[in-house]
Length: 189
Image (cartoon, rainbow, N blue to C red; front, side):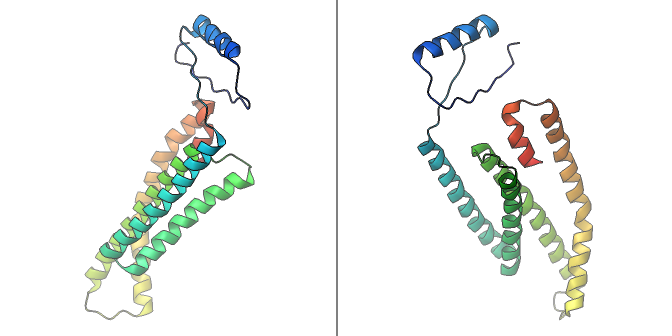
């Protein structure tokens, strides 16, 4: 079928004769030429280094935004949540000895987006509930605890719905998707 994609990992470069044989087979079987791409370890390391740098810069940008929009301590707690989420994914990949590729970096950035979005929604709700309680009121620790708890309860339903609507297509892609994106989907799961 013309829409079938096969991914083959080859450890060593192939010769020109092998490339021609593969292209001939692909033309005969699928009526299209095979595409090949090679990423050297140096390029792979450079991509990983750039992805880590971009992640750190995005965290700094998020801290600045949350600090200006809300409070400094909210920004720190939001970044701690982001680092926690990223470390969980990396830990799972380490435990199962799965390769961290640029696709996985894309998943990590997606998870950072989901995580900071959830944090900002909770922070916004906390600000609204604090203002409703009275901005000039001096809070006792238990009052602030109750405001935080109420804010979390008000936003948990939205977070569950967001998670479920993300998991449905991810499960479908794990079951029916291409093997070349399996690791991507597992990381997103």
